[in-house]
Length: 248
Ligand code: PEP
Image (cartoon, rainbow, N blue to C red; front, side):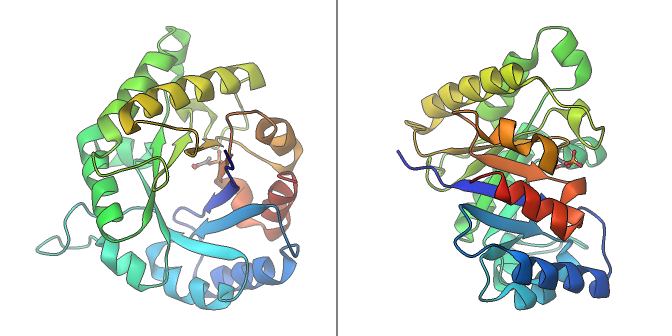
């Protein structure tokens, strides 16, 4: 079993071209040679091509933040997975809690998007996570288990997808679950995803929610945590590379 750590940055709806290109350039020149993790940044769709150009030849790859479930057609404003791939991306985030909340995306929608990503030869990063109320009610594991069963497409294998556990209440708040809670959830996720996929020894499970250089090492040291999905701290090269360094 060799699961290579993945540190993925989600830039969300931030950065105009000059700032995005400057951040990409800083990452390309700052990444340590032989870094022990796969590094990925997911800029807004407007910047995928120019960021990919700046990162070309570096150890940092590029992904999208969302894709449409259809290959093409009358979907004004939407972007197909193949279009994201065409810009140089290798991954796409699907089912982020902000999309589940802001765009009412159901597990079924997320599953269709992940399926479209696979068909376009992109690796979908499928996000799941409970709300604070669900955790307080003792339902975190059942909610996440149900999201996993509903969001993983039939065409997926443990080698072709990544799953990110992002408790909604930890995103952008500076709060994180305890390491014991993260460990328990990731172990549960590996078991549930394994039953859906027919195996999960190779499946990469990321933790996301207020990851910073200061807490990355203890989180990444957990047996079933294979990387991090990073929001706020991915907008500064120093912080993002500091998290990557914690994967050593
Ligand atoms: C995210 O939105 O995916 C995220 C993890 O954000 P932050 O790191 O800012 O909590």
